[in-house]
Length: 275
Ligand code: G1P
Image (tube, rainbow, N blue to C red):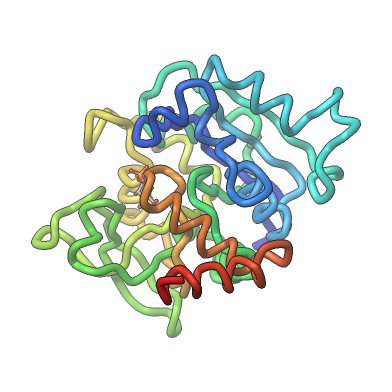
């Protein structure tokens, strides 16, 4: 499936990153040499998106807008120069499902990738491409193997028939089940490909887990109707949403980034060696 639109929910308040996020939105927290959100938008463009729809929260939209649109767009960042970026405000923090629903009008009936704005996929890891290839007209959720201890922090798929070694039909989905309730060990890593029918399902949803409108509940409804596949991706995005995982993200990306890799590796090695 050819997918040219990407929706990036980036309206998180960053409560687990206080006090860093008292003024600076989570989406603008620096990761090496650019804000977290920039990594995600660049992944979307590298994956073929020509139109980005970014969902932000009120109050911080101006700051985020100035970073990406600069002086009326004239100093747009390199690989974002030729894409159309649209900004949508989620007025109230009603959940991830509600954030995606805010993009409905801008998506205008097209299939779209959805990339969670606080999850950075290390550059060069194939994800959006394999998802688009896996789609036979149905929505696709990126899956990764999770430990029993991890399932309570992620959406988890109930698996149907395997179509090949990495693509599986999904027949159900549960948001953040404990180890006993998890229907499998394959969880949602934060990358999705949706057909526009997902918006009708999101419109109907009542608040679910945690009192929020959950994207996972819309996926469950797609799955129950035989309208959703899973693509197993051999990678875990880096979550900038809490202090420990934020540090891990910076460390992993710093060890790969051409501007920092050599010096940073030597530094880490000397720290570990007790130097
Ligand atoms: C969200 C989704 C969850 C998904 C996860 C990926 O949870 O609700 O289904 O597995 O992102 O990171 P959150 O991390 O916002 O709690």
